[in-house]
Image (cartoon, rainbow, N blue to C red; front, top):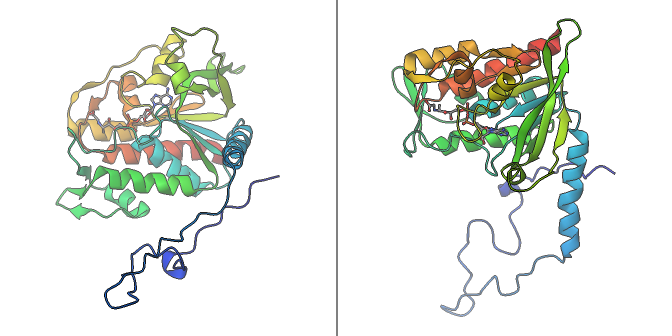
Length: 314
Ligand code: 48N
C-alpha cells in the first residue's frame, strides 16, 4: 500500500489554530481586570504509540530503498553543484527517478558559509540567473551578486530539490564503490550504478570486518564529491584506481577567473555513464580552485544535468 499522498499544508493564514494559539502569539485575553488566561493550560497532543512512529519512518524508508534500487540518475554529493544538478534535472524531467547520495548527515557540502567562515556568498554574473530561478534574493554589484547568507542559498535550493516527488535524498550514506560493466562495443568500463553503505559503517571498515554494502543501479551517475579530502573526489580517484582514467590532473592553485570558467566549461561525461562536475572536476582536469565564489558550482550543476538530459534525449 503506497503511503498517503503528501498533503501540502494550507498556507498559515488559511488555518489559524483554534488552540493552541496561532504562530504569532496573540496577547492572552484578560478576564478580570489585569488577569491573563494561560491558553496553554489545557494543551495536549493527539495520542500516539512509539511503534507507530517507528513504522511510519521505516515503512517509508524501505519503500524508498526498494523504489530507488533502480534509479534513472544517481547524484553523488549534495553540495552546491550536486543540488543544482538535481534541481535542474528534476524540474526538466519529472519522469526520471533521481537518487542523491550524501555522506554527511547534513547535506550542503561547503555551501553553508561564504569563505573563512564568513556568511555572505558571492556569485559572479551570470550565475544570478540561477538565483532568480530558485528565488534567492541577492544584492547586485557591478560584475557579481551577494547572497546575504550562504545558508539562504543552500537551504532554499535544498528545499526546492526535496519538494520534487521524483527525488530521494539518502543522506548519512556514502558511495564506497561504483558498479561497472565492460562495454562490449569498446571493451571499456561503463559506470552502471553505485555501491553504498551507511557513512558511519564506511568509516569503520578498518576496524570491523565484513560489513558488506548495498547497491543502486542506474544508467548514468553525476559525481560532485568536491575537491580532494577525506571523502572528496571519490569517483575520480576510484576511476583512476580501476584504470578507467589514466591520470588525475590535481587541483591547481587559486585563480578565480581561470577556475570558474574551466569548471563550468569542463563539466562533462568523463567515462561512459559518469558525468563529473563541481570541484571534483578540478582533480581530473588539473583546474585551478576559485576559493569563495560559488557561481561555477551552480552552473556546473546545471551543465551536468544537461549532459544527462542529452543522454536521455538520445
Ligand atoms: O561542496 P562540496 O565539497 O562540492 P561541490 O563541488 O558541490 O562545491 C565545492 C564548493 O563548495 C567549493 O569547494 C568552493 C567553491 N571552494 C572552492 C575552493 O577553491 O576551495 O560537496 C561535496 C559533497 C559533500 O557534501 C560530501 O559530503 C559529499 O559530496 N561526498 C560524498 N557523498 C557520498 N559519497 C561519497 N563518497 C562522497 N564524497 C563526498
